[in-house]
Image (cartoon, rainbow over the protein chains, first blue to last red):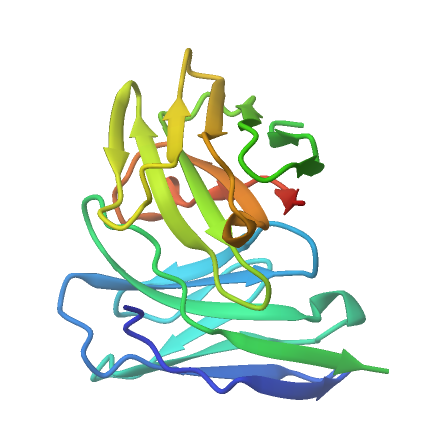
Amino acid sequence: DAKTTQPPSMDCAEGRAANLPCNHSTISGNEYVYWYRQIHSQGPQYIIHGLKNNETNEMASLIITEDRKSSTLILPHATLRDTAVYYCIVRGSGFQKLVFGTGTRLLVSP
Amino acid sequence: DAMVIQNPRYQVTQFGKPVTLSCSQTLNHNVMYWYQQKSSQAPKLLFHYYDKDFNNEADTPDNFQSRRPNTSFCFLDIRSPGLGDAAMYLCATSRGSGGDRYNEQFFGPGTRLTVL
């Protein structure tokens, strides 16, 4: 079972920041928070992941709370092409499979 | 560009008629995965190969099997497809299996299977 809880859907205006929350209250000390997204009719795409510290890459920023029980994925300037289902996944080190939850369907509108 | 390729993108088969889906990768990754994604649901892992070692998920039906003849190719065989096996089948690869950045999974575009 997925260890994360996400809102089923969110809307965002094009050009504005999209902030996607994720709760993972049962996360353990060696588990990472991963974000993937799936654009319609495509395979999932890796976005970012983190353990404790905030992370930023060319696609997004990941803010993890100090107690690690929740996180927020930030798309700083959302575009129409960011419309997708965003999955927050908790995964340990060593081999642990990606368990996809229901995700958040983000709709970016003009 | 290095990538994960799945053929065909759309496959139609008849109830009970064996079908094979293929996946190839140019990333030279050690791990290859097969996921099943039914309509409006999240992807679900069926099995994976770490090099030649096959790892089946406990709840994957026996009807599903896989072959990996070499590093680049992996096949999903459905021995007797039922109507409930209609889904998108996603192939993914990763360098290794740990939790760090270098082991992110790269997904192919998927094969949509229809069972008549």
